Length: 202
Image (tube, rainbow, N blue to C red; front, side):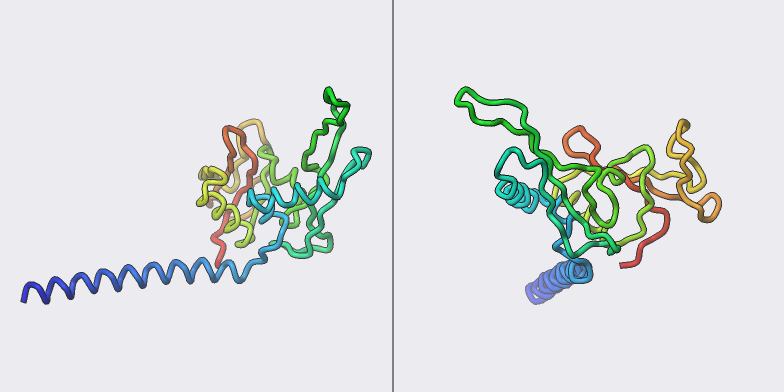
C-alpha cells in the first residue's frame, strides 16, 4: 500500500511539474507570438543578432571613406510613420605599420531609432521615457533573464521628480500612485532607462 501511495505521489508531483513547465512555455510563446521579432530593439538586445548586424554594416561600408550605414527594420514593438533603424558610423582613427586603415565603428545613438524612439532617449537616465508597451517591457525583461543586461527596479512617486535636481514630471496619473524606474546595465555602465506607471496587460 505504501509503495502504491508513493508511486501516486511521485506521479502527481511529476504531472504538476509538467503542467507548470507547459504553462510557462505557453506564456513565453504567447508574448513572443504577439510581439514582432525582427526589430531594431531585438537586434540591439541580442549579442548574436547585433554581431550579424555589425558584420553586415562592415561589408556594406567597405570603403573607409563611407561615413555610415543604415540598417532599416520594417517591424517595431511600437509602430510609427518612421521606420526603426540602426545607424552605424565609421571614423578613420589612423593607420597600422602596414599602412592599413584603422577605423572606429559605433552605433550612432542620435540617428538610430528603436521601438519607435530615438536610441539616445532610451539611454537618457535624466529624463527617462514613460513606457506603456508590453512588447518593449518583455524584450528588456527577457534580456535581463538571459544575463545580457542587469536590471534594477526602483519605486518612485508618480508626481515626484526622478531626483531632487530633476523637474521632469514622471506621470500625470492619480496623485500618490507608485511608478517604477527601471535601469539596465552592461558591466558597470548604465545602458538603458525608462519608467512604467501602470500594469501592462499581456
